[in-house]
Image 1 (cartoon, helix red, strand yellow):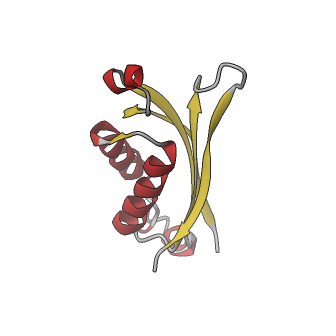
Image 2 (cartoon, rainbow, N blue to C red):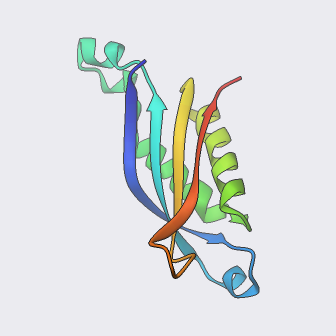
Length: 117
């Protein structure tokens, strides 16, 4: 299976378990990799058969704008479910990085792989 990826997508969202975090929006950095057969799009140079990066970006921005989770784990799980349902990819890998969450580390976060049932 081919893979289509989007790296370093930054979104602002309400995320965090501490009281001070509940009143601010924070940046998350996302790396997404979708299983996607690119042959139909490539055969006819047909954008309508490709994974639409702009639509993925808009979906992620809308999701992040409405999200109010305490945990990065919950954000990742719900976003993965939403992306798989919306775009019909058979599988995705999602890395969610929360820069600045630990002052001793460059970043912390989670990586998950999910597939459609």
